[in-house]
View (cartoon, one colour):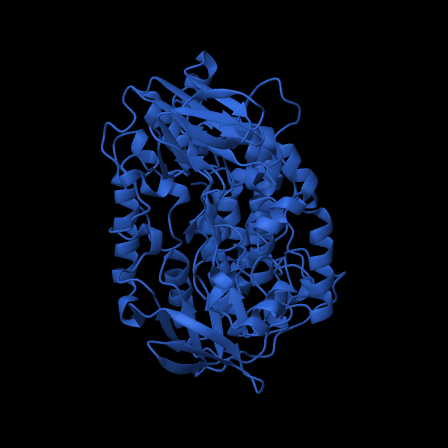
Length: 580
């Protein structure tokens, strides 16, 4: 929304405190923002959403303007938007490599700053260590859900021969229009702008509630994406994959439709919501009806009316949706959970989606993102010890559930269900409550590794957690997308990184030993129970992981793009520079 002058006039700072391009072997070197500067600007972001041209004295503004004019001329002389130069013929050329400790100040003369004058050189350390790309390389993408479609799209743009295998008869995975996992009240947990793909936006609607798109909007968006980029021709439907095997001389073989196929690389994009988890050993006697949340869409509209409803488990979506739906006309609603649940409203006090309170500047500090996005967090039961930890706890975004919980319309009981008999639920703490309907909101089990032959499974499990949730130290050529986190913007960053790495446009992966060390360090910091349940997942803040991935992929936006959007409403795709 604003020119780069907006940033410096708002802060009244000169080049000594401004934006500095830094080149190193370990960071994407398009731009690094000074940490102290960002901390100083955080409060400014709240009050500077409009024009702030009068925020500093005229003399300070003149100094800033003079420096900016000089810097902008240097930017134009060097490279557009300080991004890596890519010739029309996509051949990786030698690039200038600078010492890790060396930093540069912009000036009107590029060579005076230590930068190459010729645009035949790139400014990213990611490309400095690039390797040539085999344009004829074949890649099998297993799964045609959102993760598989994003992966196929970026791989094809990078020049690979892509084949997508989908076990079902539809494209889109759980977001296919005929998916059995969709139910009438299902909306996105994130706002519309956070669900946008980097190159395709979800249309705006008038209703504030529709800022969190209904599942029908999301399924249409996935279908539009598939059509827009011609991905349907890459997909082989009704082609379940089995016996994925790593070949000694390199590459992989797999079996689909009874025929063995060979590929140079493989991307596992089979998703996390594969097998509904229903606790075993819990007997449901006469008079009580029980079903998994994935079957909610198959129930009659009055399934909860006048009934005593027991919701087992909570999570971030289904538990909240089921509890809110039941609270409308049920006789009682009780949530059974093994630990406290955390709920946050989708809207702030002014009725605005909380996403609209965030700016790009906030995104540089994940703790600030959580403070702004989840301003109010309610814990139930309130008297239980412990505070919210984004790496451990799940936070459900509520329409009105927090209001029901506050007045006791919905209750939370920390216990497990042992059995139901005579329309009564007997709990692990010895108590019993009425139970006409039991809904299992106990999540799903990922079966992503089932298609691997046993030896390959063991090699993958020996590498958990996977390096940055994507790479297996023991199996080169295999990428796993969508098992770490399943937010769409995160899936696209993973997919884009895989395509760039294999195309030789991103820094090579660390050595096998370094990835093993990284995995051991992450294991030491992980919750053992969560690691056992989701071994492929990296237990770290998603915004920390997202920015780390963007740096390794060489996808961080350039100086011009960053400064233009620094005080704009944040969208995750602002961290995602367009193009290969």
